[in-house]
Image 1 (spheres, rainbow, N blue to C red):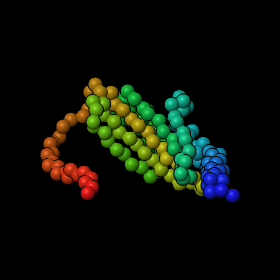
Image 2 (image 1 turned 135 degrees about the vertical axis):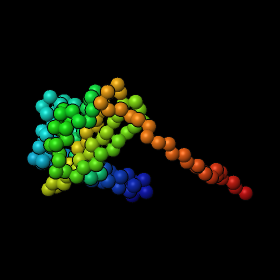
Image 3 (image 1 turned 60 degrees about the vertical axis):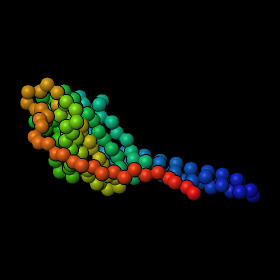
Length: 152
């Protein structure tokens, strides 16, 4: 058997093994916890909810974006966030545009699956209730080496 034939056969075995692992991860979608997490979103929002299975772990990712909010305290958002109150949570603020943005991320492990829920919330840039303000200035001096390859 030639080297090429051996390498091609090994590549084919690896591909079949990966396909088997991928199909087994798809079975996670049948876990009742996944359905419950998806159904935690109000019925009128579910069309905007996306869901995918990780290619590398037993994780199901569920996410949605909520735009045009007057503030982060409106019932539309707070009621949704309360549905994941007993999950591990992180919040990230983004102040790099004119619209205040927070990412709310929730994680919970269930038997055989970890579920990550992300809710990306955007307040209207002209909202009188919530805006981005400069609270200070930090100056930094950055020293960066410039390198190149030199060969003899």
